[in-house]
Image (spheres, rainbow, N blue to C red):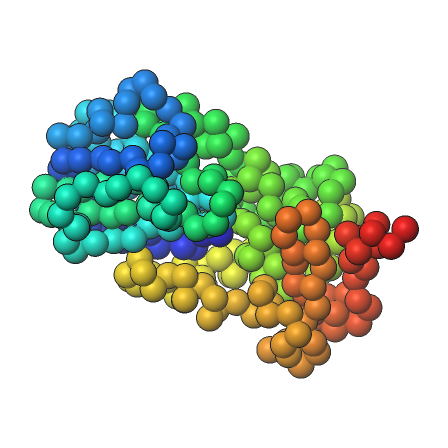
Length: 287
């Protein structure tokens, strides 16, 4: 799933490539991708893109008509830039193509989504706050005004485990499964630790890990073409998606815990005092 650093890089890429250009055609190939119908998606056609913004994991293309084309790439979505779009109309079918945006230059981009769970979402609205997912977002952890006291305030009374709290978009915008693993590894904290139990020193440690991990990921992605962002993200991860490999910090074997339809990775030595965490899904199956 694209998270804050990748979406921030896509924002920068699109700012360079689409701002000042006219959208001449928006072609929804998978109708399920459209989450709003009034105004229609075609209402942005014939209008110039004036700005590109990021809200958490949402991308917003603002036009000179006051309309916003807002996209959420969900778990398996991606944006593919084309220096020259194919001629002719794309055919609806079972392929990954969900929506195509064409500029007056002949350039443009495709939104695609792999897999069978179609969650990629596109909205056309007069105000991004009309998008439910944007309206419920918590503060952006890379915003200038996001300081340590603000993080402490968010976690005060928070009875969830740190892993779940960090992933909650209503609490903190933009952090998903991968970077929550990375942040907790950098902070040397168990993903199962209760958020409300953190001491002031632990709050400080978590804040530094949060800001540093995300800032470094953004810097690694900055200036890359859209097609290279996935590979960059994977290469920069230290624990997420690396089950069975050696921790780059201490050399212990990275472990995995499965939950719901996803999983987390962590280092026992760095994060849990050398003790493996119980896989709760497996435990329930054995009862």
